[in-house]
Amino acid sequence: MSADTDRRKKLLLIDDDAENRQKLCSLLSEDYLFIEFDNIRAGKAFLEENGAVAAAVLMKPDAASVDETDFLEYMQGKADFSKIPVLMLVDNVVTAGVSGRLGHGYVDCIGRPYNPDIIRNRISNAIMLKDSLTFYGIEKMLKALPSNIYLKDREGRYIFATHYWHHLDHSDDPDWTIRGKTDPDIRKDKENAIAAQKRDMEIMQTGRGAAYTIEINADGLQEFYDIVKEPIFDDAGNIDGIIGLVHNVTEHEMLKREFHRQATTDELTGLYNRAYFYEYMRELPKKNIYPVSLISTDCDNLKKINDTYGHMAGDEYLRMSAQLFRDVLPPDSVMFRMGGDEFLLLLPSTTAEQAADYVAQMKQASSQFHIGSWQLSISFGIAALDGGEDSLEKCLTQSDQNMYREKKEKKKAG
Image 1 (cartoon, rainbow, N blue to C red):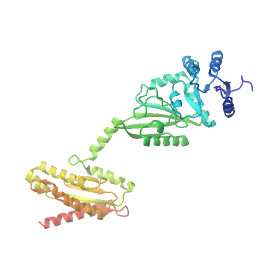
Image 2: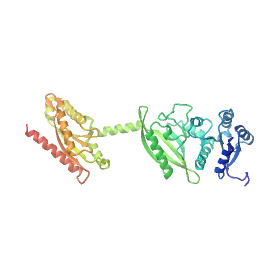
Image 3: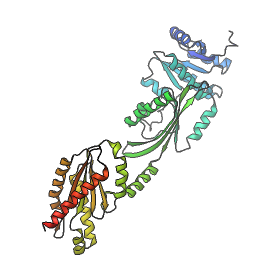
Image 4: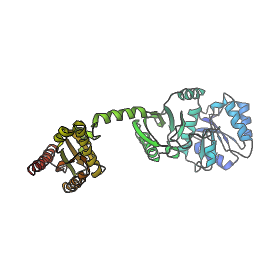
């Protein structure tokens, strides 16, 4: 087949190591037609004479001479040549020098040991990136949007991103580039970074996109981001990478959480309200926190306090009850004001015997709370839900009955 009828894309290969050039040519001969040079100056002279005949340039850097800088500036300065991506040939892609050069003339790097699939992918992505100046015009326009739009290759490495936000390492460094890096390489919140990389690999394997919201806590800020990811397919239907959108929804999420808090919280005591109790209990079978102890409570003498000191004092009596529960019960307890002076306390992974110990502690600690001459007094009833055949309604009825029994005994005792 003559060079004129050869449909393989031409690559300019510049490397003073003849053995290395031969290795690359043999690995990629089915896909590319190589034009070889052993020095940068000769490669540049070829392009000056023949024009933009190559789809990409694979070049070994030469930091000791001005030829490398001159070549890269030449490629970027001419409209026709600026469409040709330059990939750096290196021994190790993770060295500091490689990272510093990306984005300053080189669009990617190829390192040893050579993997044909990885090399093809990187060359293909580099050509796609630089295929048209229109791409850069679009990228410039996208930067005007508040959302971050990015592109990743099949290895999960960034090809570009329109914004560098503060939760990225080095985001304030003007010479830093995201190109060629993965999420674990650059993100401060490593847990979310690893999860993002895992999600990317799932998209690569399944071909199905994903949309979800993440919470990020970095630099002393709590933020929420909506993430949308979709696979990109080549003409043959193979996944070529991922395009994604990241949108800051912190204000919206905070408002949503505040509305939910207001809808589910008792304003007087700060505990959850009756409406949220039923919402919580619907999800209880999924939580795997059995046995669950329920403690029904009722404040003693509230009517007498209201009659003696007024309803503001009665409100304070209820707030004292809520504070007592918080002081004694374990942090994972879920507490509800069911209405009036009735409360329901839910203790995850707690037996009835353990709940009885907490009740004893609350009775002892209640002596620290007073309204005038009245000491805080509360009646308690306990029942346990083991996740078996006993229903929630049956357990609630039992705890209420036990609580009313104690209240009745108190009245008999005077």
